[in-house]
Length: 280
Image 1 (cartoon, rainbow, N blue to C red):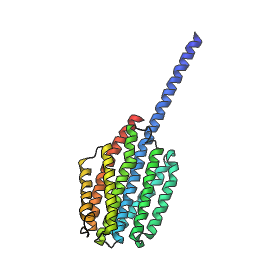
Image 2 (cartoon, rainbow, N blue to C red; image 1 turned 90 degrees about the vertical axis):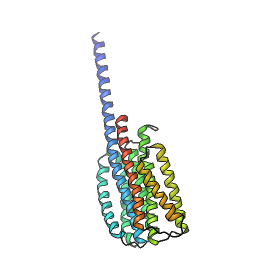
Image 3 (tube, rainbow, N blue to C red; image 1 turned 120 degrees about the horizontal axis):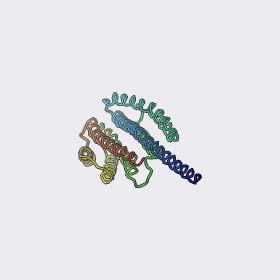
Image 4 (tube, rainbow, N blue to C red; image 1 turned 90 degrees about the horizontal axis):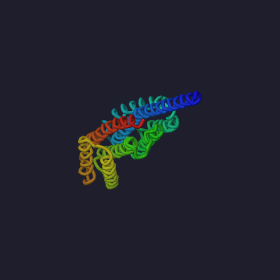
């Protein structure tokens, strides 16, 4: 009887420690995922800063000298963002595999800066776009390694997919349109090839935006700004032979659409943080 009592006690102790261990595991996972949202925010800030630098560079290289000072200021901001990224990755073991991706981003950025003011616009656009693509890939890899995509079909995975893929792709489509449109506006003309490129981006923006509308709540500000940008693309670039909008005005129109999408990103991030707590 005594032995049975001891066995029961030991069994209950085992259950207790297993329960405690599982709670600790879940709490560590939750903390890891919450930290992941902080890292992703830094990645998003870097992506949007590079996108802005792209638009400013294209406008400057196409003859709008007003953008030079803005471009140099944005360059300093990007340097600061890049300088803090290594420490963020080093804080969590799960992000160690992503250090190679960050190293590639640094390499591409340094190469871009070394020729930025003497490059032809098309090459500058391609360099910037390749760099943005690397940053989006890095964000996706970090989110995956931090477990934000765990549980296919779960609310956390769906929200994280919007943060890591859907919204970044929408932001990049608008960012490309901003860069190309600012360059065409600086020239005062678009040309047949330019209209085709902007038509393609117009369609991609609509598709990305529709996909987000189906999977997330889109506020009125986002709808207003994105629709204003699409209207400007159609009436001032695609449906006309000459471009009669200034590069600064178009840059601002596209930037307002991007800023509205960034606010939406923050809102989705808050919902994701709440989902992390539920799925921890």
